Amino acid sequence: MGTLDGKVAIVSGSGRGIGREIALKLASEGAKVVVNDMDAEPAKDTVATIEAAGGQAVACTGSVTEDGFAERFVRTAVDSFGGLDIIINNAGYTWDSVIQKMTDEQWDAILDVHLKAPFRILRAAQPVISAQVKKAKEAGEPIPCRKVVNISSLAGTGGNAGQANYSSGKAGIIGLTKAIAKEWGRYNVTVNSVAFGMIKTRLTETPAGGDGTIDVQGKEIKVGVNPGLLAAMEQMIPLGRAGTPSEAAGAVYLFCIPESDYVSAQTLVCGGGFSI
Image 1: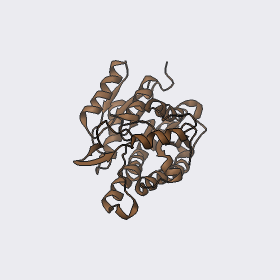
Image 2 (image 1 turned 90 degrees about the vertical axis):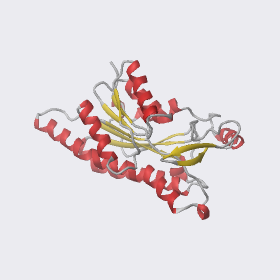
Image 3 (image 1 turned 30 degrees about the vertical axis):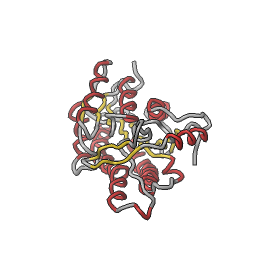
Image 4 (image 1 turned 135 degrees about the horizontal axis):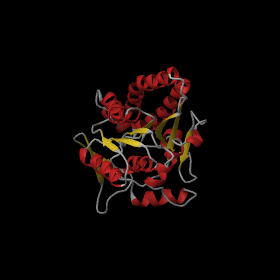
């Protein structure tokens, strides 16, 4: 018996990195998972890994910033598994510049993926959750505690030079978390956020021999942290190292289990003891 048996979860950006580990963790505890990635292959691979371990999952491919995606994402959960219990807003990337060099396109793109997309997903989920609660009340059944976990960052709690767009989006997600926690408490939904510190993913690790980039809808976006800077940053972390995607997923999982049913509107820092 898993702690999440019978639950249905949607996890944005779960084809790779932290999102993949979140999807795998939830599935390992019995949740049925809707996996999302911009690209089909990573999403299919995560689904296949879950199924190979005896779990249930389906893919919903596409960018979270696309018009209509949020409704399709939520509908996939309902059509495939009959409901919705856990929402993880994880998808995102960075596109850094100091403010005098940052373009409107950079600003808008990062705010769209980190703040507008979660807003749209939660908006699309509200009618489904409301209907599930109404149905339970009419049947005289207890209303289960549902969960929302939004992903923030230390950049959102304390700011980061060169990341005015990312810091603003991640600060905004904390505000969204607190607002929806107040709106959805009547549905017995807890809404929390996890602010990650330095987690080793493809967005932070620079490949040997050059700069790393990711493709975001046809644009090559530079990612990665200079190895020397990364080593210096790790020395500032009390645990002495960056975190792993699996450890990041564990922090998210804490907000999904029954033991956290009376915790809402909170931000948990997952940073190895380092905070700003």
